[in-house]
Image: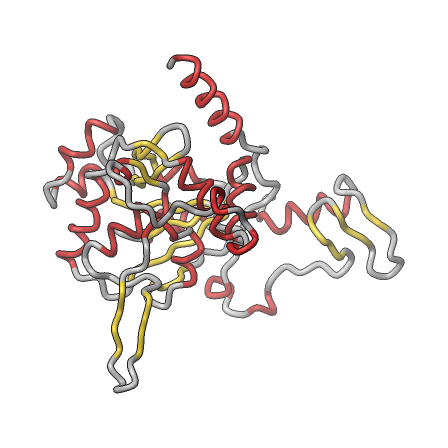
Length: 294
């Protein structure tokens, strides 16, 4: 019904509304932009209402994950460009990510859209080139599918103490219903793509009394963005705004001893204990110094 669609769109727009740009960021986006590779998983700390919900569900700051697929030009070399171009008509050399977004479904987004966010790369270690293509192919085959809001609600119920819930409220994540594969959320899609080539993320491992070890695929619908960060099979790559490698030694970091901060809006003088407003001259100077502005 039309009115149901209107309500769903209103709720999606309300949940997607962001609180505004961060006052500072922890990521050197230009370096990440230069070094990211196809099949890298991009973790994002979001600033929207839905991000706050996911933080409460997963107890992690990572609220979104996206799969880096390269540019249209890159995808032409492996025969996947024709599947992506119906969903993106921009610069063929623009770096792109594939992601599932609330209210939009599975879409293509320029990597540049995440400039200014706190980001991290999770890189699958040892993924062979033919499996890189298979992971990308699996993912692009899901373009245009809806975002599974019901799964997000189910995950919230799953993380709540199971025994305390009435049966009718308990998670339906393990109910394999016909047509259920036509919807997805960001981490589920990416986890499914890697498991399609038998690449482990957080498998269920069982060791028998004989010493034999068996790996079992974990339910893809239970994955959250933080699982890629936690996985021992993914290399965690960080690009801090001011890296120790660039500066040769941590002692050269531009520390200031005149202020101690709980966050940018809650600082105090360590000598007197007096609070210092964010608009204080010393606080402004500190922001400029950390951000490298003249």
